[in-house]
Length: 179
Image (tube, rainbow, N blue to C red; front, side, top):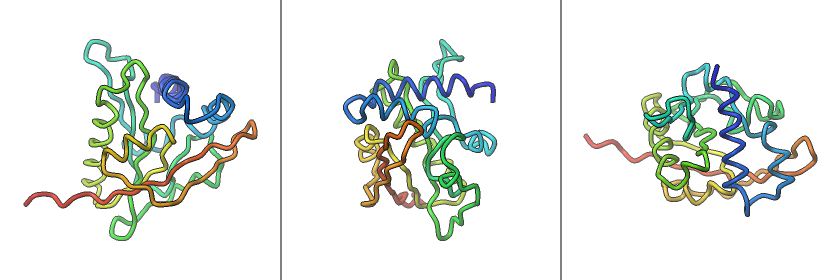
């Protein structure tokens, strides 16, 4: 839990730099710290991960997680209708990939993909073969490269400043493991 302020900073820095051209400044300002930020339930569940360089272990280069809970996206500060702590059934439901962010200084070096793959492996170990996520507009191309497809559903979440932020629902079925 000591990493919460650094996680919030990394998430904000990531969105401000990598979200330009996808969201307006007002949308970013309204969503950072409201919709986008740390979800301490993921940390409590030990399903949220931080990637740091060996040379600077206190630096957060990338972060992300997965969840067996019904919450698809949103920080602790997100609207309560998005916060669904009930557990999912791996036999009938998808695990969610959550809050993958790369610090802009570390962007485009494969770290987001690395975190994604690690989360997918952990979700599989948790009994899930199917995944879903709520992607930022700026994340869609990365997730498509990782095998995710748009489900056709998009949400617009009204932020505290009145701005609406678009989220794209994406899904993936994990390939069968070699026997």
